[in-house]
Image (cartoon, rainbow, N blue to C red; front, side, top):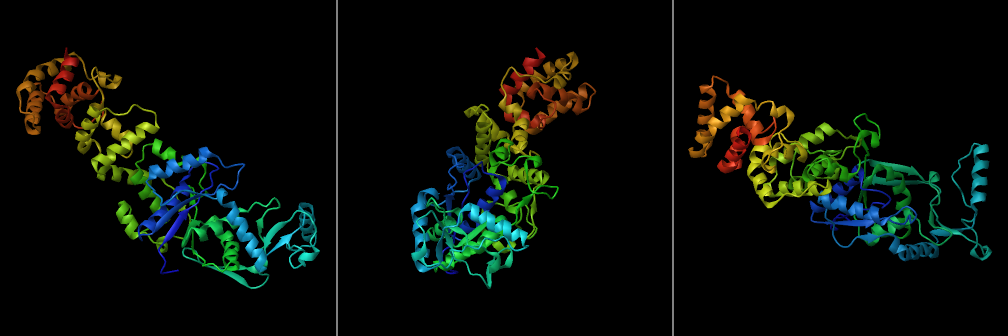
Length: 467
């Protein structure tokens, strides 16, 4: 198998939205495949018909699309492959690796009750395991895997190391239910084999399943994939991640204004590391990611670290990519899309407004001056800086700005000279300027705003408040 092209898969159940833990699992599979020129496949495990919904499937696909986790080939529906799963169960029956069990639910319950009373293992041992088929009744049955009763089943896990299971602790798992439908435990193995999956990278809550699933591979004489069971994500308090820790669904993070590249970076670092590197690009992540870098302990989700990583990515993203993320954010929050003029204004303002912004809302707030239109809505706090004296100074300043060369050093010279002429520090002059140019007290530098706005718009805004 080591010479085979790498094939990984993400196999969510469409019973809810794409949660952050599932997103990280998808990311790890995507990085491992993409970094090795392999394939990353997507399978929707929709065998639970009562709980699976098209809406949940759509939410999973949308979450992956936003995160940029593109998959190869068509999306596979596990439910639609039920005929293939049944065929494999019947093959195991024919080979003697599975058997028909006619025990009823009541009989199984009685067995377990008696075992508990006697202080014995409640692991069900079917009386039909070794019976002659000619003695079988004409009654409903399930098909069970004939698991070995002695010895050990060993999983050489790429993350957890060697994990050993005593076979006398493994039950004869059901492969086909009494209504003839295949179980999830069988379907997973058949699908992974048929899809050519070489590496099964998933949460460590599936580790116990791996032992039983390996027995199916062996019964069918199929290659066993490399298993890599990754620890779950915990909250900052060290407890299993839950709603009390904040956002859980991927789309919530998008609506909170975290750019997708930042989420990929942060999720990659949740449980995996490459030296001391905290902030990196997709190409670096694909290049560096390996299973050996995944820790055995649970990772802790930390919003402060996410904010830091997000701010770094906002600072280093290409302008077009960042503007695209802004537009996606506005779309999912039902905000008005940017006009072409606003997009061009934002592009020009990015060098001044991206610094220090940790999320897209923070970026938009800093860029408010270029995205807003006259007449400006002046915040109450900013309006206090527009008293009669300040308005008079702005009115006096306007004609000087009509003829000056629109360069930073020239603007600095005029504004500083105006402040000195009125015997005030530059900060005293900057406050009414901020109010006039942005309607805010917290803004980028007045020089940066004037350069981005241009002479005509700057003068129009000053005239509006000093009239």
